[in-house]
Length: 347
Image 1 (cartoon, rainbow, N blue to C red):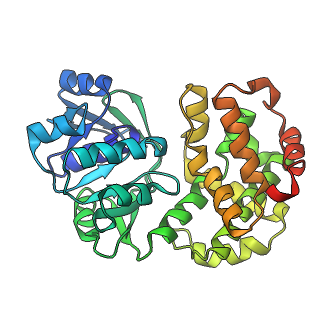
Image 2: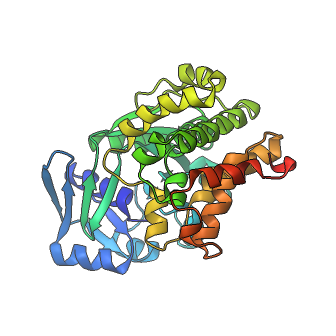
Image 3: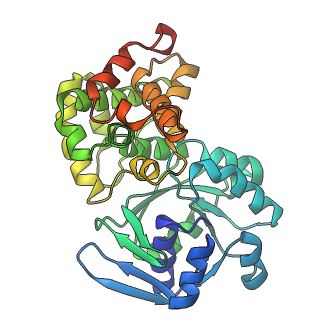
């Protein structure tokens, strides 16, 4: 449900593994699948796979009418659509386990409130993907890994783990969904919101002294919130976060920026940051579930988060037309000045 880049990627991998995959997406995707008869997967090294017979519908109700109750529902809608998706799933009478592979903080709680925590599985996928055209999925880096954790004690993680393992993904299971999703947030934060605000590439953001220090400070704010909560990081996607996080909290921002530079170049591949793609395309932004979540949780816990709060405010101003691109484009020092000008209560 939510057949964008992640949804289509998993659909084609499941179909290639012999599963019956049904995608719930927008009309252009449904038309493309009907015309081509399946999904095309483009690998990071030029390889090409085609999965024939992948079904598609424009609503969960339509999918149920033709295919019945599924063994597993994978929720991959944008975070701002989670409430609507939860309502549709509840109205359709879904009783299947739900796996959410969404970015950001809070999606599991919304789904659990509507459908019960015992059915919700949190997931964090590490494969950077995009959709160059409806019916085609491009993988930007060969990192086929996913982490899973139950949102409720009875959530059937094994059902999702088995299906994803059979589809060629390396699955790691964790006990605490908050630890999993906050660790994934640490991977989503660097060179994302600020790239959109400055209209710079990740390399430009991490290569500039002022913007790289802002990114380091934003990361340390998230670490401080996790420590106060408390939420322990987990080892994810090959990164030893439990070892790295205590070191990162003590480093000066300039020193941490050097480490984050390599982290960003190794993690994103050739894919543009998600928040930048959304802004350039005139779509809604997920920043309130990323940097905004850090700021909200920081406010609740008494942890200052001026950088994340500023990022969220500026990006929403740009997204909703309250500010023009020229006001911040290529101006990291101006953003830094706005961070320092935040009221003490917000700092």
